[in-house]
Every structure is written in C-alpha cells, then in structure tokens.
Image 1: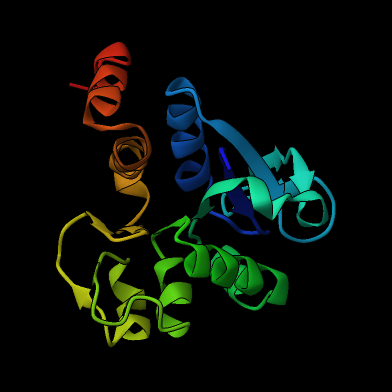
Image 2 (image 1 turned 180 degrees about the vertical axis):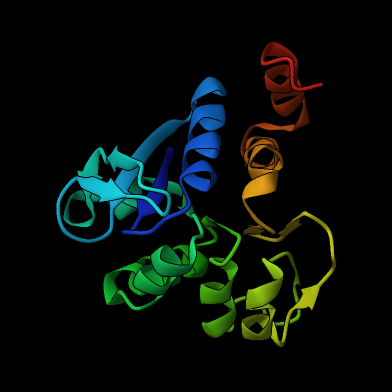
Length: 182
C-alpha cells in the first residue's frame, strides 16, 4: 500500500494532475497516472495530451495509499459518471485510504456524501454539490482522509499538503526549499 494513483479522464485540468504528481515523485512517492477511460493517451482540458502509465483495468487497489482526482469540468463529470471510479473512491474511503480532490472534483465526493460534516475546499461553481460540508474558504483543506483544494491556482499547495499528510511536514518543507518555492 504505497502507491498514489492519479485518475485522468478526458478534459482533466492538466496542472491539477501533473503538479502534484511531480511534487509527490520528488518526495519519493510511487505515483501512477491512470487513464480512467479508453487508452493511455488522455487529452486535458487545454489541449495537452498526457500519456497515462496504466489504464483503470490495470490498477491494483490493494497497493493504493492515496487516490487523487484532478478537476476540470469535463474531466470531473466523466470521473463522477464512471462506476469504476466511484467504486475505487468507496474502496479507499471504507479502508481509510487518502482521497484527494481539487477544483471541481470535490463535487464527486460531495455527491457521494463523503464530505458531510467535514471541512472542505472546492471551486466555487461546484460548491452546491457539497451542501452538507463545511466549505471553509481556505485554499486547501485536510479533514481525516480527505484532502480538497479550490483549483488550478493552488496546485502547488495541494501537492505540498499531500506530501505533508503522507510523509510529514519536514518532507513538504524540504521539497519547497529544493524547488525554490519559498
């Protein structure tokens, strides 16, 4: 159980997937980009096609330490409409595995009622899907196994929070220093 799976669906927000992937790899995480539908080539929201490492059929859920859902309106819709994705989220939530979502993607967790009573962050247009969560107004929130963030502009902070939660505050600080973030 040491793998971070980042799910990619057509129309995903590129920075919300790749910035955390890069930062987590620097921290030593085994990061795997997963095509949630179709083949390995996944076109992002802004015309950047990313080559995933595996398809969702190849994902080994027993290795999962964290499941990351990037946003993007279309990508979020496709992830949220995919029964296999919803099953993976349920699997993670039921086993105390970290589930992270940024921008529009926390709306998937809200619709699944996983954020009820929890502090959360989400892109404002998608806040109605989190009607039972406490949307704090913070850029990034961590509540129990859930890490949520507002959007593309906080992709770095989202990635650093994932590192902090998984590897500790010192690891996040070390990566910030190494990449000259602060």
